[in-house]
Length: 132
Image (tube, rainbow, N blue to C red; front, side, top):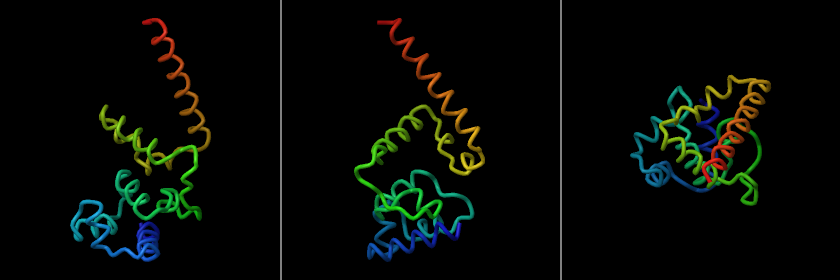
């Protein structure tokens, strides 16, 4: 998790933000925020989303170190990600966003997940059409 910590610290410095300011904006004490940053496990996805917005850097960069910044005109906005997170919380499916688990799935597995998603979407549309 050293990479995550160093990237967060780098962008706190770039944005001229102190740990106290960031922790307050995230709703944590400085001690809690330090624990989050120094935890051996991946941080909670909700924290990553909020940090990326606050630091104006992509979640990819914070988590993986990819060198690109948030494009406010991109098709996938943070608002859409937050809507997905809200929906998953609503149905108690927060573990679906567990990045550590997703990182274990290879390309073939992700394609399979994508195909299953569209299959379920099609079935949902069929059910919706039948009830109308």
